[in-house]
Each structure stands twice: as C-alpha cells, then as structure tokens.
Length: 446
Image (cartoon, rainbow, N blue to C red; front, side, top):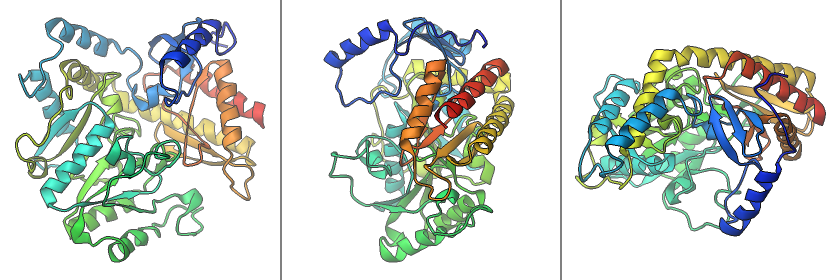
C-alpha cells in the first residue's frame, strides 16, 4: 500500500470520538454527517484527520474541490486579499475582483450572446436568484423541474429538489407554481422502455404533456435542468434531449436555466457539462468548485435576461465577497495554466474503466455504471433481475472503503449509488490506490 493512506487507529479514532461527543452537545442533531471523523489538514486529494489517519478523498467536499484541497494558487490569492480587506459589501463599496470574475465567467459560459453575471454565497442562493431573474424577465410565475433533481435546501430550491428524505420531509408547505416532469434515466426508464441500447428520449413526451395537463407554456418562466443529475444519482441527460429542451424553450419563450453547481469546472471533462450538447443556456448557475473551497455561487446569462430585474432587486450582504472572488479567479487560473480539463478526462477514463471492472466481477449487485468524465457512479441493487435498490450494501461498501482510507459519498433517490468526486489534481498513484481500495471494498461485501 502506498504511503498516501496511513490508517493508524480504528475509524473513528479516539480524538474524533471525543469531538463527536462535543458535537452532540453543541450542534443541532438535524445536521447529517457522512463520515465519522474530523479533519485536521488536507492537501490535493489527501485528507488527514485529528487522529493522524490519512485518506484519499473521492468526495471532494461534495464536488467543491475540483482543483484539490488547499490549492497553492487559491491559498495565496486568499492570503493576499485578506491583507488588503475582508469585506465592504459590493453594494456599498465595489471592488475589482468581483468585476474581473464576472468578465471571465461571461467569456467562459457557452454562447456568443452578450452576458452578465451576479454573485451570491451558495448554489441554493444562485438557484433562487436565477428563478427570480427568469420571472422578472418573462413576467410569468411557473417553473418546471425534473425528477431526480437536486437544487438546494432553501425554500424554493428545496421545492425544486426531487427527493423527500432527508431534504423535504417535515418542511412543508413548499413554494407554489413548481411543476415536475420525468427525467431521462436509462437504467430505470420512466417511459418503461428497454433503454439497454441507450436513451431514446421517450420521456420527453411527458414534458410536452405537462403543457396540456399541468401548466400552460405561457405561464412558465423557466425550465431548470442539471446536465447530469447530481444528488439524483449521476444520471447524464442525453445531448439530444438537451437540444430538444432548448428548442422547446425557444418555441414558448421560456428561460432555460442550466444548473452547473456540481457539474461545472471540469467535473465532466469540459468546463461546463452543457458544452457536450452544444446548447447555449439562457442562465447558467455555478457554485461549489468555483471557489476552490471558499463559499461563492453565481448566475451568468444573457444580458437581456440578467438586466431584467429592477435596480436593487438583486442583492446579498456577503455574496461575491472579496476573498471568494479572489479564490475563484485563482481557480480559473489553475484551469488555464495547469491543463486540468485534460487531466479530468484522463481521470474520468480510468475511474470508468475501474468501475466497469468491478461491475464485471459483481454483476449480481452492481446494476449500472454511468456518468460523464470523472463524474462517475455505480448503482447497487439486490439482484440484477429485480433491480431493487440496495441501500444497505451501498453503505457497507462505503464503510469498508473508509476503514482502508478512502472517502466515498452516496447519491440517488434510494441512496444506493456510489459516486466519485475526486479532485482533478489527484496523482496517478493516489488514483490507483483509491480504485484498488474501492474494488476491495466491493469484494468484502459481495
């Protein structure tokens, strides 16, 4: 075993258990925890806990660390900005990093149309503001979202999210004028078709039918879509489906909002996942890896739409704060100067190959391997014939991997999907060791 993973204690170790006891008495029990250990330091794709155990991180802070933990460019940019000033509130006293970041994102987001940007604190806040902007532009109230979607935990974002437990259970009533339609999912086709040869887009008819049965298209301000369902199970939308969606939005004057909170910044092998389809979104939402670990979200889109809200209609005290903008600029520099997109594709190919090897060895319970680039996942089932989701075995795989020094996250409506969000800067040795541990974890629970 390489020195990248050094497990010195049982997991959780004594210091982590001590902190867990303090947490129990100090922090709301409503806060879910994925791994029972406390971080002490992290660099690149490695994370060390307070007991001295070092892990390979395939979770990346839920897709926040595409450039890696404590990337030197990000750390230095934050230090330099902190020495100048920490906060003014952009709406009180403006600062150049905000403008520069807007300019660079305007240039990066697909499409030749003139663009504008606006920054907030998180992905959920960006989702809420994208809908506000779309409603202001169209003067329409309704929004259409997809099954398997995750758009956040605030009121409107939670309403758009398509998973009850833990995200919506007990938190009703939800926001009005939100309508949901089936999403492409070849392994569990919502149109009850055999999609073993690939998605044929039969479920698109459900979206067209929604205009007849649920909401008139002239009432719809926006349709919001993740190019790859994130929390929903890493299910890619076919490129042809996204192109048809673009045509439908154009036909009815609907704003197409593309949520790239998790898919953005190289996670699928391109800067933004929507680029695979050649579609130009009206509004594109960013967050997570935009800040390289600092809290920031953004909405970037066509100038005509972004300029629709009245002056003062958009705002936030901390959104686009100086430290986060400096970090985001450093993230973009890292992509430009370190060829991280090329690295993303190399990492993605290796992960996907390893997952297919695991599926070939365990075809009885590894039902599906899917994803795009390094945004890859495996869906676990009780048996191949029934395809009954196997949440219990999924948890056992994650636990077995953790004990050997690999951090994994689950996803999916039934929490039976194991996903990978490793930093794109992960070394070949770290990647190979992580994949070896992953394969051993599957062998252990077979």
